[in-house]
Length: 340
Image (cartoon, rainbow, N blue to C red; front, top):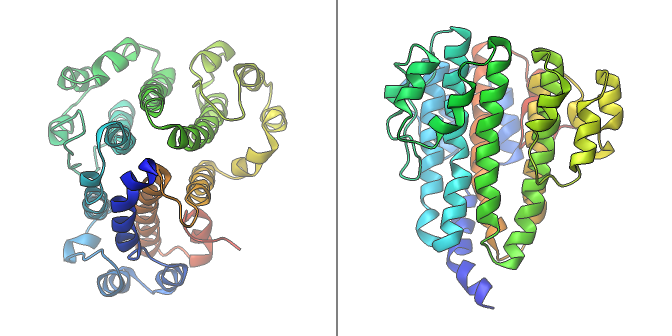
């Protein structure tokens, strides 16, 4: 009863905010629209995305404005959370900070122009000024700007690694930090929330470990030992023994054969489709755990991820309009749209 009382206010608030999520019918209408201007008009009339004319000027500007709406949506929930619940949710939301940091690292590593939006920092982020990071012309310069954060000590050992392996090391270390912190905070939650969220995070860890091994074998030509050493602990179906078997697979065919059957369909297709499949699996898992009438932290987590996935889907549809990609070719890359 005490647990239910704690979440009564937040679930009431969530019901109100969640009613503004786009429906599948809205998704179909957006897919059927002829161009970017029509999409912007539709969103203004039928959603919380009240976007101005700058929205369609570039991919970076579009992403920035969409992300701003998501942050505003998510911020309305935080005042209803206390103590360990709040700390866990704030760490969960720092995924955006880490993913943006990865984008900056990739751009510097590959020597490409930093054509990404100026990310708006949040109170629970460690990085307080992303615009300063965007002026970095080398990974060493970036590291210097990160000295006041946890990220400096995480990234420093790999700055001098071989270039063809460096990006893999840097990205996996950031993910290892994130999930280690997340699992520590999960351990401080009440038993009901701990059981639900440990399972969800375990599936996420499984998928990331599989993706890392798959990508490392395909792109980075890494020896087997690093693949195993960099694997995340805490998976749902993949223990260390199974991870070692996967890391030692001699071919993509053998890798897929050794993979738990439940995940195989997620790894059919190119890298972008694999990413979408993984996110769709997690989205449906959140929805499954967030059963009607549930009064626990999973309700909050499902809302936060739905906000994020809806934003990404809108961005995907926007880019498809910008480049004239047919709706039929876009559907498989949408997380919240049911692919028939």
